[in-house]
Length: 112
Image 1 (cartoon, rainbow, N blue to C red):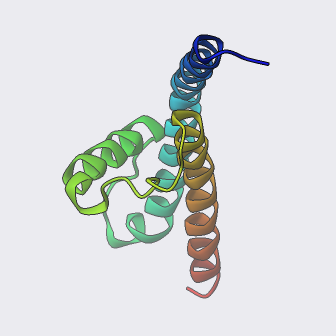
Image 2 (cartoon, rainbow, N blue to C red):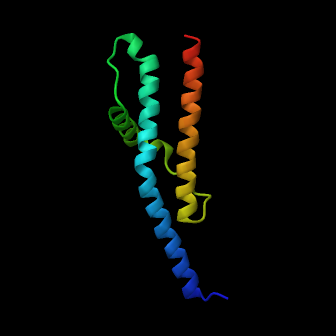
């Protein structure tokens, strides 16, 4: 059986591991979001005469939009008990959101 000290130590180790996982996933998720935005930009904004943007430029726009809307969305992962669960929820939420938005945009683009 674990003592309170061992339990706290294991909990702290999971928190550190979750934070490292978050840092490792930050760049791939940012690039994925940038790719999605640059593709959607090419589909809907470039035909209006605006120049195309690259993945890094789009990632910058994603970061800017996140800064602008940070107070609006707040953290919706309060029901998660641990930091690891919150980080996993954020990563999975980013993947699902990016896929859904790009998929819906692709369907709209097909009918243009």
